[in-house]
Image (spheres, rainbow, N blue to C red):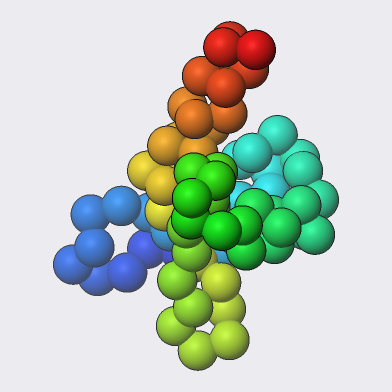
Length: 74
């Protein structure tokens, strides 16, 4: 179930939803992509209001597009 914040046009996904959205990748894989150095350009962006990690679909789509471009270039 997606979380919607009033006044925010995009739906936000929690960690489990983001994992599913990214094709069922593992939690530790999401964390490893979140914690990569910025110069590697393979980051998943997240916000943490309180203790819960939240991801925007736009950021996840950007990550997917970067991964696809890297795969095509290889």
